[in-house]
Amino acid sequence: MTFPPLREELRGLQPYGAPQVSTEQAPVQLNTNENPYGPSAACIADIATAVAEAATTLNRYPDREHVALRTALAAYLSRDTPRGVVPEQVWAANGSNEVMLQLLQAFGGPGRSALSFAPTYSMYPEYARDTSTAWVQGRRADDFSLDLDAAAALVREQRPSVVLLPSPNNPTGTALPPEAVGRLCEAASGDGWDGLVVVDEAYGEFRRAGVPSALELLPQHRNLVVTRTMSKAFAAAGLRLGYLAADPAICDAIRVVRLPYHLSAVTQAAALAALRHAEELLGRVDELRAERDETVSWLRAQGLRVADSDANFVLFGTFADRHAVWQRLLDRGVLVREVGPEGWLRVSVGTADEMQTFKQALTQAMAEVMEEDAS
Image (cartoon, rainbow, N blue to C red; front, side, top):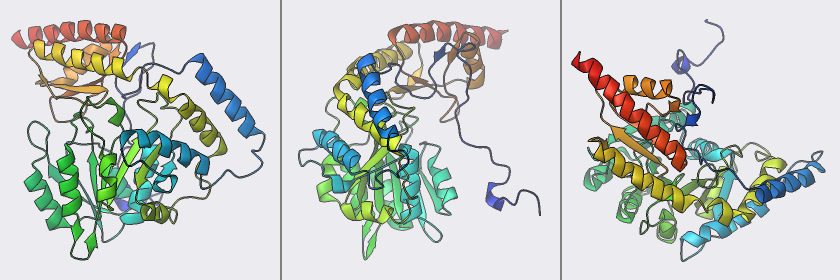
């Protein structure tokens, strides 16, 4: 047997992760959809005080039910739905990645399947693989929307235990209309079978005005799960705090697979402090939305295809050799993501100065590539 005795289906695979480049090589980092604006001094001080207080009891295990945090998260989510959210409907973990993994651990597994529609977040099939859940992949239309008739038919045919629907979608930025969520929740249940429909709203706070959250549909569909994160709009990627809202029975089921005391006292304290500063941390969202929309317009004016975006990133193309464009951007100190369908690139929305640098670098990069192609 080859050492180490790794599961056969994992042999030769590379770990997930966006390319990491030092800020010296790429001062403008626009590849991981981070919020470019950090917390204020007041927020930092509040977090430091909360963590210091938590440190006085580090000899004790944290609250494994994270009741205070779930209460605060429920209050925050209630702003996005007229029916409100109660703490019993909320569950949190170390980033939305762990939330998703716990969902697949509890509701996937051998003999079960998970389904999504490509192009979409590249970690989804890895969650399925890691939990020995069969992976079923449908396709999006050329404009990255969902053909609801075809999508519902595939769900009814495959009867997956979990349907993963990011909205806005990563890497395209496409948001789902409410009727899509309701239609697929109905398609995923019936005849003695209930599959979960997980709407991943990691970028939900960036959606355009008039685009509702799937949270509004929770009262109508007991098989609906809506996930969020503090990594993006909350400017807390380093905190690693993701959470979900769902029927309390779903939260209770996740307790069976969660690790004991999976959220540290420090994480809980820092997250609670950040939530106290929600208005401030979310204060730049409108600014980032405006910068995103201006970037979309500018890219289209350059003759490029651009996906409509409700997120804090933009997918653009298409390039005969996208890697050549990506490399030339990097040569000019701008790091974007080479991801999504062939020929496309994704740029995170940064500060106004960062986006101006990106535009200048892209103009030069495309001119160089065109010149080389012509020679």
